[in-house]
Structure formats: structure tokens, C-alpha cells
Image (cartoon, rainbow over all chains, first blue to last red; front, side, top):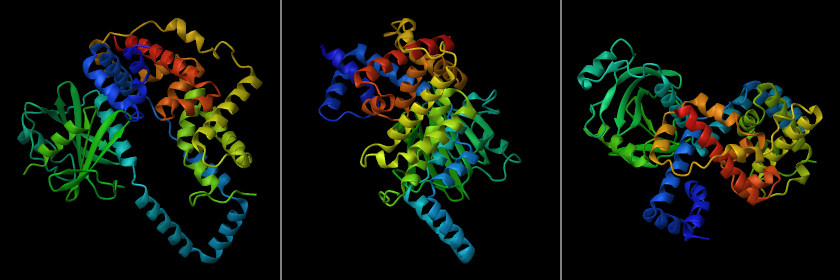
Length: 254
Length: 176
């Protein structure tokens, strides 16, 4: 089997980060020198990114409730009912504590997933930009009266990350100031929103100057989320995570 | 009798953590919301009944997905519904033209696709091919996909490669 054939058989595993050493290094070395295999590698990644846009069907809540009931052992159900009758409010409090502990142990990814969904909504909107960017001093005042907070932003784009404009969009369950940046052919969406009441990821794996941030990869998109005061910020795009962090740093230069 | 809890969670609670992914998979398998709900219910019922047969330490998610797929196949056999739809994966070979090296143009075009294009392209695959693609995207390894589909690992590899080639071809058409 030629080197190219051997590498091509491993491309999907390489993309899925499932190769152990020394295979991983071997594939990487080969891709550096073989333009043909690199094209195939990029094409597979492009297909993955495209497939990442496939719809996700949410489990209906009625079915979830039914399944929850089904998996609860009948003995436990009886004792739960008895306990509920006796303990009432204290049981509810205990359940609440349990849920809080679980959410602490498993950082919530919902916000990240929602950020990606909202980015896609912006991309597919008929008019993603409601106000063309003539600089930050034109875009920011436009939000006055359209939002119940003032988005704090000091970066108005540069040659590398030109700002296309702004719009008001929904972020999870609230209105957000949405700024659209370009990087080469990619679109980057920045959502600025009130962070209060959102189930924020607790695991920080990046920093933007003094601010801790959460970087995540979902369905082929990278996102970077951080908080500054009362406001939350989410950058989402299909650019590399490193590029997103560079824009994040520019946004946080004071 | 219920098996003692594993890693502090009951068997049922562990099943429940895969319910979202299972339902999503069922939707792609059946392309029918009501049927997907039935299948998820049936898969849970079968899994709970067969708890004793689940080997500790093996992959619960793959086991549950296999149960759902078998429930789907049983139903299809019972109903003998539209055998034309239930194409073998070999049908895909004829559809899959060699699209090896379109390079940058292909990659750029794929960027412009919308959700409905992706959905339509996936719907064009045979049931088996779509299942393999979805399981791969769901994060299963080829060995795990082989267990879910009850086929050889080599078959998974070739089926996945063919299905992705068909998808690329279909998506190129939508992207034009």
C-alpha cells in the first residue's frame, strides 16, 4: 500500500482526533508534503462542516417525561411518592440542590450550542446586517432604543477583521446586540447580551487578557464566550479557534 | 431484579442520558416524528427488559442505538413497507462518481450550503448509508458503528466512504 493510500484511510480518524502516536505525526508529516492528500483532507473537513449544519431534532418534552417515569424503578416511584407526601417542600429543596450540584459537575453546554444556532440564524437571515458599518460610532448609537442595555464595545474592526455592521438578534431567550465581522471569507458573529440568568459554562479554558473565557467546538463551529460585568459576549464562527481568540483579545484591549 | 448502580447512577438514568441523541438518530432513520417517538419508547422498553444482558464495561450508547435500529428493522419487516425505499447500500455505488480532486472550488461551494440542502442530501442516501454517516457524526468509532449495524468493520469503512462520496456529489449539485 502506498503512503498516500495508507494516509487516506486514516484521514477521518485524523479529523476526529482519534489517531494515536506515531500515526498522528505520520499523517501530519505526509499532509505537509503531499498537496493531493492535503486537498482530500480539507475536502473531508469541508464536508464535515457542511454536515454540521444538519438539523438536530430535539426530544419532545412529553416523551422525555414519559421516559423518565419509565426508567424510575417502581419501588423507587412508590417511595418517592411517599416521601413527597411526608417531606413535601424539603424534598423539592433536596432535588434542587442535586440539580445544582449536577450542573456544577457537568458544565452546561447548552449555551454554546445555542450560540452556534443563533450564529446560523444570523447567517441565514435575509438581512443579517441591519446597519452597515461606518465605524463603531455609527453602529453603537443605532442600538439605542432597540435594546434595554448599552453594548460595550471598543473595537470597530481592522483590515484583518473588518466589521460589516450590526443588527438586533435573539440570543437564547433575549435580545442581543449583534456585530458581524469578516475574516477572509468567513463570517464571525459577536453577540453582546445581558448575562444575568443564563446557565453559563463554568469551565474556563481560555483567557482574554484578565478575563477567563470558554472556548468550545460544536458541530464544526468554534465559539468563545466570556463575561465582563453584567454583559455576556459570544463569538461564533467557522474560523479556527486561534483566530477567534485573536479577535477576542482585540475586543478586550482597553 | 435491578442491577446495582454503576458509577453512582442507575441503569435507567444512564439510558436517559442518551435519549436526545437516540431520538435524533431515529428521526434521521425514519424521517417521521411519530414513528421516531414510538421507536425510542420501544428501544427503552427493550433495553430495560434486557438489562441483564448488557455487559458491564461495554458501550451503553452503542448498545442502545443497536436496539433502536433493530426495532426499526423489525417494524419495517412487519409492515413490509415500500421495499423500494429500503435500498441496499450498493445502490450508492452507482451514484458515487469520483469527486476526488475538485479542491478549493468544492470546499468553497460547500461553505454556502444551507440546512435544507444538507437535509435533502442526507435523505437521498439509502437507510443503511444514512445510518452509517449519522453514527459517524454522532462520534461513534468504526468498531462501534459495526456493533450498532451488526456488520464487519471493513464494511463500515467502505460504506462510510461511499456514502460520503455520494453526499459530496449531491451537495455539489445544491451548491451550484
